[in-house]
Length: 206
Image 1 (cartoon, rainbow, N blue to C red):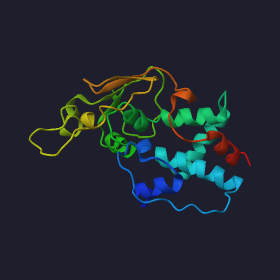
Image 2 (image 1 turned 180 degrees about the horizontal axis):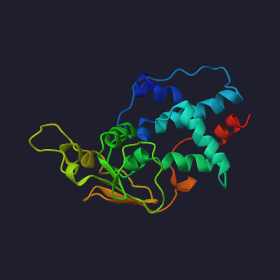
Image 3 (image 1 turned 30 degrees about the horizontal axis):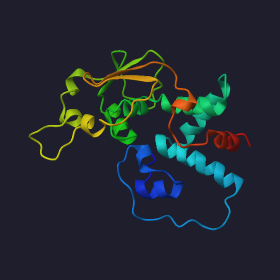
């Protein structure tokens, strides 16, 4: 699988993103030198697509497939696209606060730590549905990875690191049991991602 080797903070600067959008509590001291040249309409559309792909960790081919499915669904294509990206299993684990970043959430799913409605799912792109229960396997819940370990100096568990993060209204989290319920498909106003999806629709509509 293709891997983007560009440092995360550098990529955030180039796309004009705050690292907090990715769950990263860091800021770069470097300032991005913007060109005085006016960005074309195509350039603006392309940057929005790049932002969405980068935030959710999706490569071009699957991203295009998401768009095609969103375009075939009822409602606004852009809003459908954003909802599908949010309903990825790795993003749900991140949103529930059981991973610091979406990249870490993908690892947790890959490592077979996650159950959906009681069944093991190890596919980060798995699309959850309204009513689904998502949880960390019982045998993994006591791991230092999640709750920290006093004997391991300097190790801060995920729950401690994500304690102040707001769980979106379309999810219900049970942090004591490392589980959560998908209450509904998220509406666009409930998705706090700085992406103009209409520009992405314009790009793919050409």
